[in-house]
Image 1 (tube, rainbow, N blue to C red):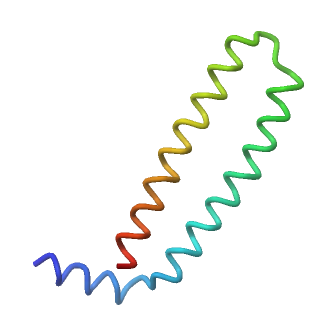
Image 2 (cartoon, helix red, strand yellow):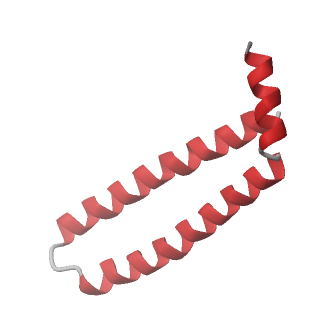
Length: 77
């Protein structure tokens, strides 16, 4: 059953397309992170809150990017 699902998914989505989507998402993450870091650095009123926001942003987005990477690797193999 599991092999049938994997074969039907492999026919539906090419691993190249999956990696392209991952790279685009990573590029968007980098651009957004640069913009947010600029604004957080220049317009931050309370440094304790700002540090917590930055840590939370990078933690959550890092988890999402890592899970996407693991999924792309698992799908490609």
